[in-house]
Image 1 (cartoon, rainbow over the protein chains, first blue to last red):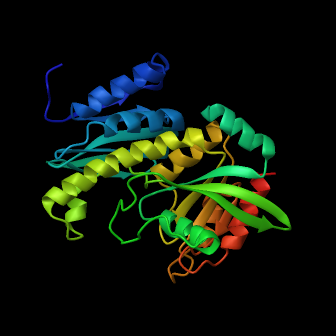
Image 2 (image 1 turned 90 degrees about the horizontal axis):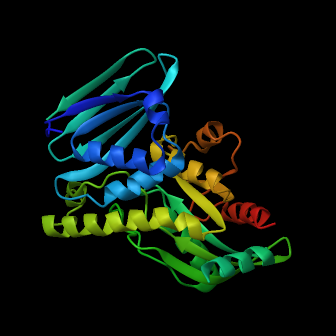
Image 3 (image 1 turned 180 degrees about the vertical axis):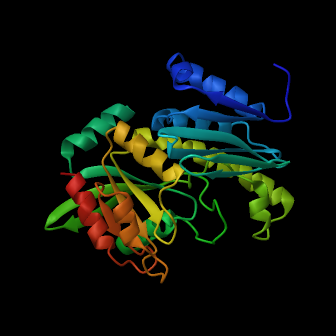
Length: 107
Length: 203
């Protein structure tokens, strides 16, 4: 995959069902390190979340600070989770209501 | 060996290894200091106001407490604050040089990983939350979810009730079916109640 300045990926619940544990974590780690903002249907279970966090923390350096995770309940009648990289040169602001989502990136 | 030790502790019921978890700056070390100072005359760590002051797990063993005439023997584990990201520039705002800030960020990162791994080694957990802030965030949700999925009993300590802007009732509302004890780790208010709640979890 060509390295992008910033990519937004939407992962559906059906796509998530095909990925289990380690495969899901590997996918998320690689995408987050490759500058992706991930919007996924549903929520990550807490064990997956802590495993993702432990893996991603190994990559922290002076440019990449880790990740932020936001869960939005009842967005268009479903739950969505937004996971995005926290970087020195990337400042992301998320505004969400039950039917509106805005991602403002200051790069 | 670790599993045997854990089974032994569980079998005796009144011995427990208690992990203190929470976000950065929630007051975990202040709480552990209060308990260890009152019972053993020692403190586990310094509290400075700089984020990620605790960057390694620290354990104090053989703390003997008495609740309703029953003696408890606990080990208490102070864990580094959990965060999903660590920006070294934050430390520079507290007067650290860039080199010191980068070093602290590396140590803090290792500390968070250690804290997350420590779930597996405790019998009971105290989740310390800052009652002056909105507690329903990703870190607290992840902590509670992890403990519930691992079937580790826990108590939520709604800390900093000595402050005027504390809203411990909000924490009770947000976590309605969880045991919440409003405390001040700084003044010691209600820490006896927190220990009583832990004793209940010890059976």
